[in-house]
Amino acid sequence: MAIVPNKALPPTTVVDWDRSDNYHNSHLLQKDQALEFTVQNSEANGLPDIAVSPAQGKFLSLLAKSIGAKRILEVGTLGGYSSIHLARALPDDGKLVTLELKEHHAKIATENITKAGVVSKVNVIIGPALASLQKMASEPKFDFVFIDADATNLLNYFTESKRLVRKGGVIVVDNVVQNGCVGNPADTSERAAGVRKLISALKDDDEVEATTIGTAGEKGYDGFLYAIRK
Image (cartoon, rainbow, N blue to C red):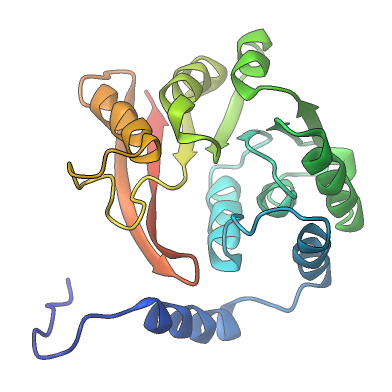
């Protein structure tokens, strides 16, 4: 049953969303020294604070685990925060391949992934993500793909991901709402335009079934695209 908005209440803000995240996380997420180290080490080494939130990371992990993923592809490693969540969803013999443009980011991510005890499951590939994707063989297939990288190349990343993921496999794309900017035609930024290009292409794409879901939390108002390869 949908909640009917109470028009008598004032609009919510990021303060409300942050408080809500803190409430739910306090009950559903356990204290995690490895992830705390990842945040602190990434910040200390100058990485931007643009990783997924704790709740979003756990959500990605649960999604991957729910389909029994054994091979995961990640486009955009940054400091390895989401990589750790995804690697934890894998069985002992599972493999996460994660793509990172910047060598410094990859170095810090490897430190964080090692600290988390999942380095044996993770292969960090350094270089432009699109070139790395295009070099990948179509077999063996991946079960799950998470795309969290530059918006200008989203459609290209998604197209390559379709080639690399198995039938019934899942592709998740982050940052597809961008505080409502993507749905606002007055926003002409490259970031919003890149997402619109992907969404427009999906309208007539008969190889996947997809939807988007908005999120509001400590990272602000944004959302994921969730697609299943037919």
